[in-house]
Each structure stands twice: as C-alpha cells, then as structure tokens.
Length: 223
Image 1 (cartoon, one colour):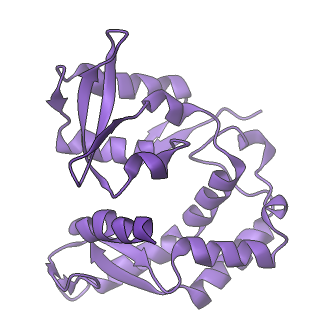
Image 2: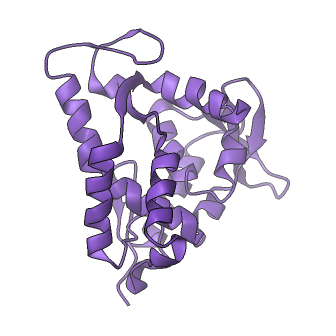
C-alpha cells in the first residue's frame, strides 16, 4: 500500500506524523486565549474542512481561531464564527478517515481545480475585478475566490453523480482510500467525463473572500 500524503493550504506532508507535528507547532506557538495569526489561520481554515462536522462547526462562516485551555489542561482550538459565536473544534478529528461522500467531493473538486484557476487568472489579466456579489472592486487574485453559482458546486456534482450510477460508482483508488487530501477516483474515464461536464455546465464568478466565506455561507444556512 502506498504511503499516504497530505496537502493542506499548499503545504505538502509525506506522512500523517509530519502533518500532526505541523499542527502541534501552530498550537504550541500561542498562549492560552490568544487569537491565531493570519498565516496560521489560513492553514487551519483549510485543515478544518476535513472535519466530519465541518458544516455544523463553521455555521454562518469562519471568522478566526483562538487557542484555549481544554478541561484536560491541553491546548485546544476554538472556532470563532463571523457572527461572534464560537465553538470548540478538534483538529485531531480532521485526521480521521474521511466519509466516502466527502472523499468523492474532494476528488471532483481537485479534478476541476485547473479550470477554476484558469478562470481566476483570466479574470485578473487586465486589472481589478468587480465582485459578483457585493459589487466591490477586487485588486488582486489573492483577495478573491471563485464561486460556483446557478448551479452551486454541490448541485452540479450531485447531478453528475446521479447520472453516472450514484456514489457507489465513484470508487476511491484502493491505495488511498483512507486518505483525505490526495484521494483519487479509480476510474480515470469518469474523471475525464466529470471535467467535460463541469466545463459545459459550470457557471463561475469572481467574488471577494469575505463574500464567499460569509455571505454565501449564511445564505446557504438560511435555506
């Protein structure tokens, strides 16, 4: 069996041990009740999307993180939402085996990432871009996200999955079935079909990171 490897926020980890040490390094660099800095926050934002209860934990949107003292006198992580509410979140739960549906979702997202990045690059080729939600001017790609709309990504992916035999037909390659960041679909032809389907049916727009992580998430929650 191939050794599992992980990629979080652009950082590559060859083993789970290496990833665990990276996370512990972040946690140990803060005092109790200290707000996590911007660079570490970006890393943790990407990491917690792997949490089995991510949607519930994120709520209306992730505002940031605070390192807190747990009841066992260890450093723990508190997620602070954009509405000011907070909730504890275990980073260790993010390292557990990922449910099949989430693995498939990750595979599909990675398969079309080049398309998404191409849209982002092309949009800023001639200067600032207007946010498709707020109308604010976005100066650079670093301040922007690419949003799927009409249909949203989950709707698009769900339609494709149902048209191609349901989740059971989307088999994760055996040597990576227990992973969560580099899992791949066993059927390469299915990946190609998905890329073509996405290219044909996806509607992508440029939005600010704030709009993508707060306004859209709040709307989805309300619905």
